[in-house]
Length: 371
Image (cartoon, rainbow, N blue to C red; front, side, top):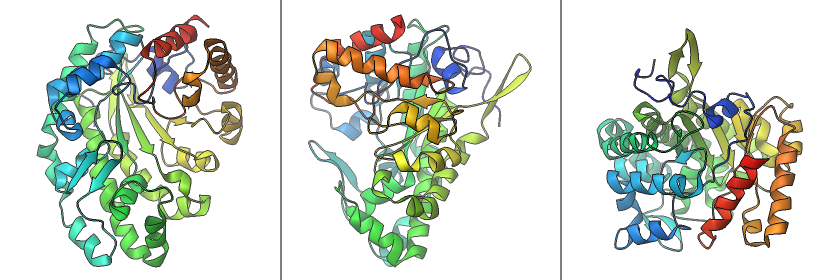
């Protein structure tokens, strides 16, 4: 399916931006940089805007979600906006009882742990999202319009859409909320693999539709987050998780655009936390670029991936609180190691901590762009 001719990629607004070039494996003269969770808690303007509004309500308010997405682009001069939303938004819109509890994270009204409970869950039709996602679609549209008024590199600043990978969504559903070891989810995977497969297939369809809707509405790249995959062995990930993640990305892989007589696909990034041993399989599910967390040096990651895969990452978030000379050396080291890949997008090896000084992030952007 071809993107609408007004889409930022198809219109040529973001196709040659630093970010999209790097995701294609074409290293630009200036290394692109953005930060996961840049749209949010570290910014005083975000906290002021969010007063009195619950997280999921903010995600489903198009004007507010768009403004929050734009804030860090204006402040930091990053090379991408990341859409302000949450991986559980499609769960809520399809009928799952879920709220984001401050200081804890997503909490389900009821955990899903038995075959009967999974049957009841998967009876919720993911096709509902075709209409229920309209607030998300409108927020993306507003954001894309706003980004065209902010200097890009060149053209407009690209928007990165994102979704949670099926294992991470399933872990929340089975555990009922955040968990340190996801042991109930991993136990279900082995004790009832048939029920687990149904759950993963449903999660893939729900989150895949969420990701596709963002791209169709104007996102120039798609990132799949697997926050909890690091709790899995390579064997378990490959057998019980990777096929569902591949299914998510199929929702984006058929989206193409033509520019100057050449057909291009929408770039896809796959990122997981603690997934250094899973990188090759995470790439093989259908990603163009692999995000690497702070635990695995980028040159090591590049070697594991064969040296021909663009990388994203991987500043240690803890280093954001170090003296500048320490942080500067760390960022330079990350960039040196990133030179081992065909292209590199500087990012954090996880999200921006809420206590981060925003000026530190701006200073990192200046450093990366000056190298």
